[in-house]
Image (cartoon, rainbow, N blue to C red; front, side):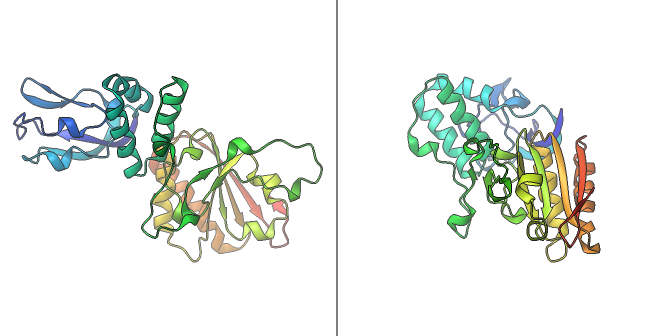
Length: 275
């Protein structure tokens, strides 16, 4: 069980009008004994598409302990309802920026040889600025191991973007990954950043001195809560202001309630590492 957002229905207010049912793309709601009911935590993504269609204001989003949402079980259920339902579900995920769930849905369809329009196969995070530099990219499958001794000249970056303020917490490359959270100066001071720290990890960078640490804490907490991380490495400079980043990660992890191995790497101004 994890603590996450999920719908709650006030049965006293619910009149059984059924307006919420077709707007729940995952089929998490059913009318039972004249009332709308959540049939399973597994099917509720917590995005609240049903809320705006309730004339009695009987549905709200709360945060509570619940079984994790299971995109594959949802897909197994809705593919039986036809391609229009599948398409609506994919559009629903894309519109809400649910990149991880969208990728899981597409993977399920591909694995089961179910044809989909390639337009739905595009993983896009439509940000207000429309900047192509913020588009989510996961190219970890293109990284190849190399026996070359000249590893310092090889990029080990597996994703884009990397700046904490631009990263959606549910980006697909975070799940089941080892996460590196680094102060941005580390990349300039450490000559072996890619081979020593980035290799094999998802990455988030930020400046604990110039950026909003409270926003960072909430973003990091979201990444931790929405993904199954194997470990977290925090790389900071030896300067005092950098300790704020480590403290923020510790606090985010504590508030998430999860138990994840933390490792701190301190980089000296001269570029040497000390653990």
